[in-house]
Amino acid sequence: MSDAFEIVELSPHVRAAIGANGASNAAFIQTADGVIVVDSLSSIAAASALRDEVLDSGQSVIAVVLTHHHADHWAGLDVWGDVPVLAHTNAVKILQAVSVEYGVRTGEVLPFPALLRLWVGRAAADLLGVDSTNGIVTRLKSLAAREPVRLPAVRPIDPGTLLADGPVRVRIESLGEGHGDDDLVVSVSDVGQDVLILGDQAFFDRVPVVGGPYLDAWIDLLDGITASGSAAILLPGHGRPGRSTAPRRQAAYLRAIRDQSASVLPDDWDDERSRNWHDVNRALLRAYKQEESRTVDESRAETTE
Ligand SMILES: [Zn+2]
Image (tube, rainbow, N blue to C red; front, side, top):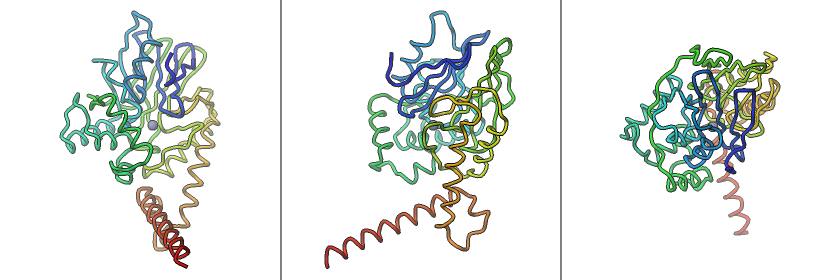
């Protein structure tokens, strides 16, 4: 048994690996045609332990679906060999853009700046920088030193696609922009219990990563899940599974960020600008840096008195 995840049964044919300490989750769906894997954990070591624990000999994996382009959800992809990897068209485009920008072809090891960009997204990668002493950057450096993370070959799949039919139906869906603009949701109709695999649209028991420009849409999307009153079990991208009321806390957190950030935004910003979360993040960072240098100046003044 690995201490990187815990296996939880969500329905008769769906099992989830819940990442330890809020790390990314993965899911396994047993269909009539074979196993569909959703996401592949944050390292090859964790993913191969998961494969050995979950797959019986004779079971074959027919597809891996990526919920979005962030590498903390697919750094362990190599363990599935030549199985087709499917993702949102926009996720495929992001991976292609990284390929061009960093001159790395599919199957090649990602240089560290490219890995950071794919792990946390462009906005956060720009904000942190590769030399940051932030924990996420140092942990990622030690992972990259332990095992190579390669640029995966990924094919686009359209929302609405029925990936498996029969007693266990698997449909690819999109709930629209929220966490990003490349998030897929996997909807499973299983015998007696439906499951909705939400990827990073949902963070339960953990603070969500907020960096994209779609904060309003994200709040609406989460409210919509709760309002639907769906009986499905929800699997978030990070944290433990929940029911339809589980997104409430995340929506409240996002609302608080949106409302409180308004107090540091420049007066001349109109509503539209205030809704562009990339711009808001920059304004928050500027306000933070001003506050930081003011505090440093004050403490200098105190020590010279
Ligand atoms: Zn994630």
